[in-house]
Image 1 (cartoon, helix red, strand yellow):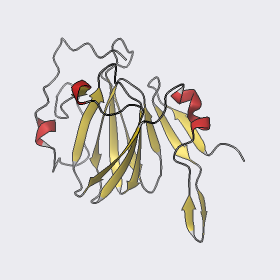
Image 2 (cartoon, rainbow, N blue to C red):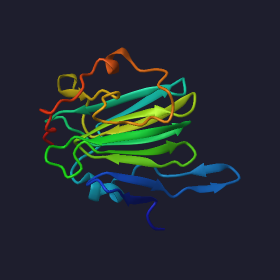
Image 3 (cartoon, rainbow, N blue to C red):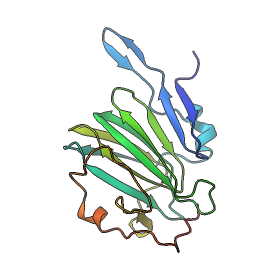
Length: 187
């Protein structure tokens, strides 16, 4: 029957776009979201520990750029279940060839794609439609003591959002800007 998930490389080591094989008929559609067997080369010995859901009522909402420090660095897999987002990741791995470079892609209920984000990337998104929902699969439990974040308005990150930011949590607004002393995180 073959693979149900196409794994597409990006220019970032360990960052992949997952494209499902969707079966459609008069009833609707069916596609695979996760398969340990197919994703084992990416997952290695890791396993899904937590699944989260995000609902965003307004177009232009921004969440991010979140990550966790070691020993709680995590792989995240993000899928848009309703609406659409511009999904953004920033490589913050110490000594990475793509350090502080960003990757963005539209994830939507229509395209059904998913982003596989390795340890050492900050993640965020901007909603492109009202009533947008995302599903997150995590390989680590959330650890408040090891959480970190970058400020989405940091000029050093130069994130180009397609829409005006209409909603950003006070917590995300308060994250400090990076300075020349930031050398990345260990993964």
